[in-house]
Image (tube, rainbow, N blue to C red):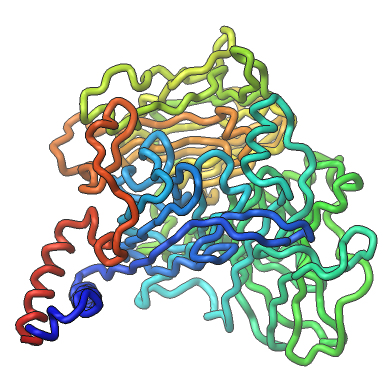
Length: 595
């Protein structure tokens, strides 16, 4: 007993010992992480700037977990503004309380902690996390999130000899506050200043375009081996073409679903998307090779500087990479050709995913559609004196009180359950209008891009089947071109300017789920809504209750207690009462042992 009482350090160690003991005995293991978000100064493009780091790292650390793991992430906000972390593509079953967007969560104030707790139920694949508020992702705060297959479930390819993560994205030397001020004043963000690969600037492949002395990413490999490259577009608003000089990219996965394996010489990755490739080191080592991520679907001669360049270096390399970069596709003015690549992506229906039964056993093409929503995006327009972006003529206004929190606390007027199922002939307006979605319905969403820029759309809480994509205006006759057999399932999909994309989703996950554009400028200007999905026979079992550490704001702000920075061990337990009591018992047992 004297040893136990000697110091707070002993108690801290006991709690962590108890945690490890508890987690090892649990049916589904728990993995825990502590994230501290703060500002650091770096110069990825040669200009010192303040970026958002996670645990002092830019980009942030890897969250590495396995199917069915319980994930606990304690987030400490050391920024000078509110914060929320979101986990796009992670399908939190019945638990939108952990989603990390303003419609579902009150923000974490500066100098406060908050703990996210969710289960990776029946998921595998490559994802990334990032801060969701006020363009903060444009300054960093992002990092990779990998969900591994359980040991009993084989991956549909030979085990790679290594695993690399590449976070690629357009980058401005102005931070998110300055970019936000530009949008608030009615300006366009303009051309980015470059493209970063894992937070680093380009290799100096061109002495005119690239300053001397920039740090760049180097991937070291051995000849003859095959590696998995998980590539994520974490940028602000630019589609990127990814390629590795002299090497084929064998596509095997997109956002948690295995694909029919196809070789590509280069691959378009749009904002918010994640892809996995197998790359075999089958070239000679006379020199290093370029890794390139360059701007796509823009005037590429003007945007030449918006190019990220890293180096692939064989262990027996004879010298540095030299010469011109490998060329991007030349189909920019051939719209039909450009769309062939996404249309070619197919689901691997013979591969197992998170569970041993084949993913293809879900015959989505034979399910009757219950609701159709046509979501039309337009170029930003002035509404009430401010530049705004819209879906179906509505520019979304985030509620002061998050939607489900307002429901459970009888807060009236927080939002309207009247989002139109198609564009209406009425003036554009700002509103908090939400989709009244049908629980266990099978929804068809048509994303009609009448804007001038390539856009990516994301649906939180779900994956959807990408069944159709074409140019022009969608009509009911367009359904005749749908893929009803092996379309890829993913959570973020591109929509070409002047074109449409059709997706199908089974609405079996209750909660409030964000449906948004991933391009940060359009998202900030209001191009989003939410789907409210509730069980009409709700008995308290189909949707998780609010966590014990739920934050209050808006009309419920008076209910909020102080949550400024706490000890990390206590934060891990916060919002996990069952774990708390189990740990408490384990600590008591440890006390008896030490006494």
